[in-house]
Length: 343
Ligand code: FES
Image 1 (cartoon, protein in one colour):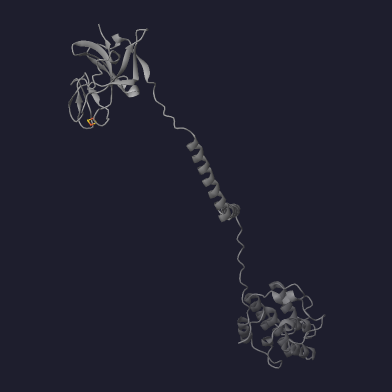
Image 2: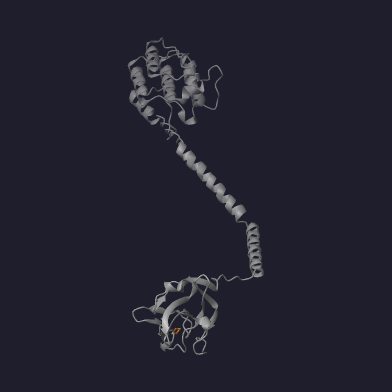
């Protein structure tokens, strides 16, 4: 099996065969020999242009040409028109008709046969000049020698603008990542950042150590209001949260007075609450209980609540002084600075 022939080669062979069988001149034989020896290059005048052999004709054209040839006289005719441009079906048909109606001289066919011979490969040798193949054989040869169709070139995929933008964004991201990993996260940079952070923290710690601790507390002396603001046998809790005292107007040992009690349990320092319904101070921690006078009566509290200093100012307002305390077990509740008598 040889390489498939092109249509031009087949047509050339057919013309060569036709001319060798129908003409008495010696030139077709010479052309035939040229076709059989493709290594011998034809002269520049006889060499066909490359395009004449590049584009093959379809089997339909070949069939039409063969039918025309089979129906004709087999005489070759000059084919000067078969130049660089490939023939159309119409041209081939016209050439074959003209060939069948010609005078049988095969001279011009030489150039036509030489064209494919110049490009023909060794396998494209024509049959012997003395034998003229039948139409069926020629059809078979034409079919076997029909060149393969060139593979269709797939259209190139156009890059959409969105794809370009996505590619550009991807490039930008890659650049940012590269900057992040190559510059910002470089070990040298990280080491300097860690050192600077540690130095800053150390400096702040030293500065804080050099500054004194300031405890912001409410003033120890403050006004609580007029004595009439505290009815008899009542406990005012409005100063408990801010100043940590209760202002009480009660009868102690037969004397009505106003005094201030610290809201600190004498057991372990918790903050008791005043229970109006039970008329007592109750510590939530261990259950110590105190009367309205501040004397303990239940729970683990070892002693009564403490009083703080209280006095009636020149302006008629009660003033509390938390800087001094008075303890009942120490006999200090008899101090006049620990209460204001109510008349
Ligand atoms: Fe108040 Fe224990 S602290 S009872």
